[in-house]
Image (cartoon, rainbow, N blue to C red; front, side, top):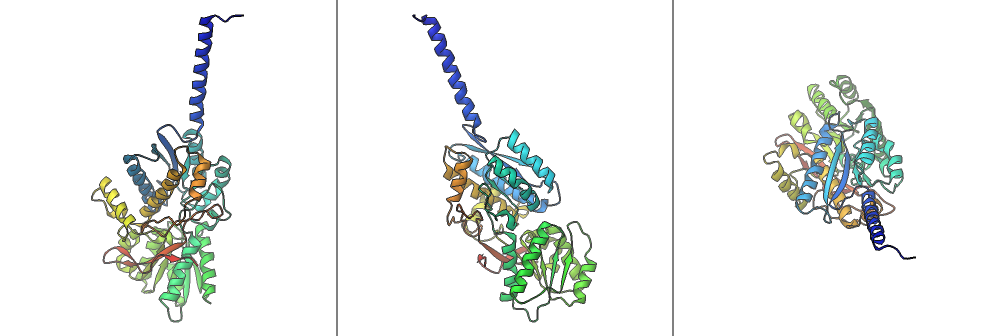
Length: 401
């Protein structure tokens, strides 16, 4: 039986259209990708209680990828960054993640910014196979190792050990009487545990453990208790900027002229701006360089940022802006290594291939592997200089012990 030539042509046309449609559908099924874009999500507090930390982080991520897009993108694709506000809330972080996953179809994610939300999302992240770089820095973020979760920083317990080691080994206080101050939340308790263990390593026991929560406007009772114990060294565990400012002001008000040692999230230059002379004996630890520190990577960050926001150095001075920049640098490196034919699995493999990645002064080197998803192993200790409003490094990048 011979087929009519017109019918044959019609069938061929239908088949061509069918396979073209199927090909387009397959491309659309590559989550987070089009021929010219990569879609990245970020879940970070934009209007809640942690904005002194998370807004600078957000700005660092945005500016880095803006620069990347203006210089050709990544393997021929521009980055489409979608930021969702979780207001530092677990339910809102879950809602933001679902929106990014199901509506925006992201390839990878940065955030969330607090340990509780990160832990709540990990099951979903692993199930949906979304490569994720949390901003939260708790020990549970990296242990056990999760295939799709990468921490591009040093974690809180290790930085707490670093600041206590500096207090004891470098400053060598005579007859140290140590108090710990912490918020009654997961991060505070985690840092508190690490601090107690490290003090025990140095054969010390804190004489008091005082609670000071975010939003507190007064620390009189905490200061008076520490004064009654004749405390001469104070360690802040799991603090944010606002309660650190309150405590430093109250210490000065009641004449407690003692060294105070802050954790990573309390290493903000805003604390110096708001307390001035009360910060004369304030030290803080951070795995991130300050805006004005030395190093090729830091100088490049300043140059690019001031191109987009000339005359606005002050809002970008803190280490949290550097943190956001670093998160973007590390994710960008993974995306580059994954190549043009990228998907979530290739991105995971690419991130795990990063070894001794030189951050050029922004931080210590970054290393990942299939058995280790904690990228950094170092931090610096800084001392506040109220005269300049800067944190001055008093150590190099100290390797975590």
